[in-house]
Image (cartoon, rainbow, N blue to C red; front, side, top):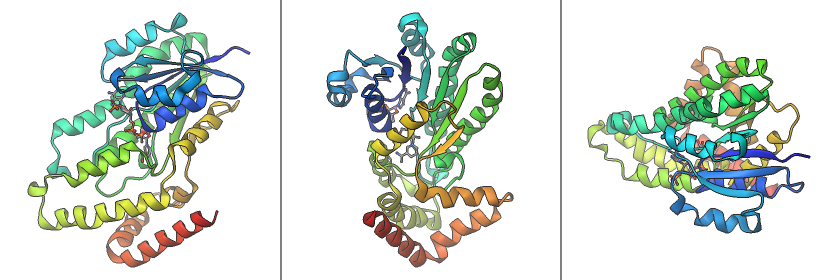
Length: 305
Ligand SMILES: NC(=O)c1ccc[n+]([C@@H]2O[C@H](COP(=O)([O-])OP(=O)(O)OC[C@H]3O[C@@H](n4cnc5c(N)ncnc54)[C@H](OP(=O)(O)O)[C@@H]3O)[C@@H](O)[C@H]2O)c1
């Protein structure tokens, strides 16, 4: 069996790090993993987690998805430039009222989360087409299906990713290529800690009182509880992704968190989306107690499993 070459972005922490190690430790040694990160000085955690796979089924390389030269240099450096499985996992998060965010901050999110994927594919897709072989795996989010309060820009970047991949998937079929969107719900990872830390530091002076209060006293308070209730581990998401990668006919979309499925399903059964928006509104502003009780109930169910 020939080993499949996997290139993963954003492996300095979180899902990327865990997934790189999970694939490198595949029981049948099915993968040669190139775990990339934009700053190699952040490689310590990956080196430790990779253990004996380092230099065998896992190698660490530099790749910044916002820099075309860095992507090209990384791919040029691989044997025959071959990438069988590309896993686009990079991300920048941003939460808060848009009046308190600069256009430059928003552009970084779009540039990383959306154009990062586009840049990767501009470099890697032509080779995959020529070989008529390849799997493009994109770590998206349930927020690529359903936007939520104060995640306007982040959700927009993930919607962009989903629309882009839906369009590309039709063309990909012609070349025998697979595209899979992995859609985790909340994940307990470094990312969330960073986002919350930044969120708490938000300068709300440009927001009106109602919006500022909604953000600090409703959103930020519920946020922690949501993650404690719905939050998956990075190991869980990595295992879901591993299972998708080893399938013969991988699905186009895969949600990793069944607890979150009712929220996204509502979107599909409600084409004009009024019910979905209204439900979110009522959950947050009118039935806060019901919402909290439901979260506690779900947490109890998880604890019993
Ligand atoms: N955490 C969640 O709740 C959650 C939920 C749903 C979906 N997701 C998705 O899961 C994926 C991984 O997120 P995570 O939770 O594991 O977050 P994370 O721990 O913050 O990892 C994000 C990774 O992206 C890297 N990155 C940022 N800018 C980059 C660039 N220009 N080029 C290359 N890499 C770059 C970061 O590198 P640095 O260390 O250098 O910043 C980091 O390694 C993302 O696509 C995210 O949208 C996460």
